[in-house]
Length: 277
Image 1 (cartoon, rainbow, N blue to C red):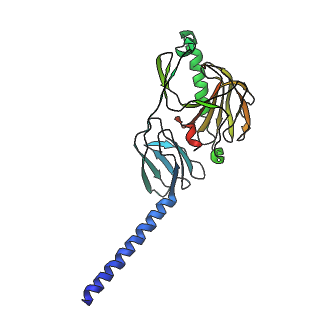
Image 2 (cartoon, rainbow, N blue to C red):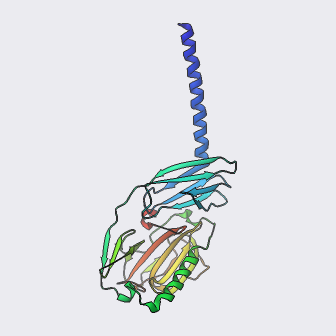
Image 3 (cartoon, rainbow, N blue to C red):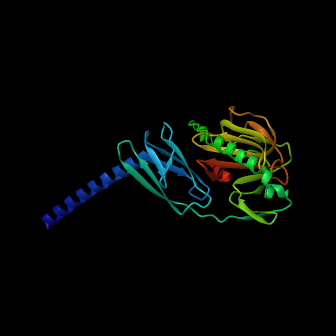
């Protein structure tokens, strides 16, 4: 009986030692890799890991700053299961499987739009292509400083008339999904910066978006402000959360005065509203 008791105590000691080692290992992994945010289609994830590490999201390389911070955008139709891989300088590899909540998107019908804006005539193709290149180049201007750490606020006041992800039917013709948050108000209503950042684009008359401003908030995260009637800032200027950028208008492809506010990170368009929740 005494021998059995000793064996049992020895087993418990070994088991407790195993649990302690496991706990320390998990704690070390947790210390090396932290991530938070909205695990939902259109969401944004904020990550932090060891300095010098490499980060991959579904095998796509993600930029990381000198302090180990990184951002991951989740697509409108992001798969239910995705994987984050971290390669530490020591050679150790960490993996985290994440589950993404699925969303059901609205169908939005908009009529009485100038037919040339719904399906542009061929004579505008070159202009549209040049403007698209201009926008993409601006969004790719990489600024490492994480201005976004201040958080986000609404860029204007008004009524929400359009939401992220909705399938749009323009004059009866199915078009691409909408990737912004539409806020309607009177022309001339102030539009402010949602967070600190650097102006990377300020154009008064783009074919689709009219008066347009794009701000880099660091690490590939940008905010865009479309259909403006007036722009009060310029490229290269550092702006601060709450600072006036321009005024609501109805320029470009628009049926009335409103602001189309968009957010994007590393080429992935995310839901602006989720940043306010």
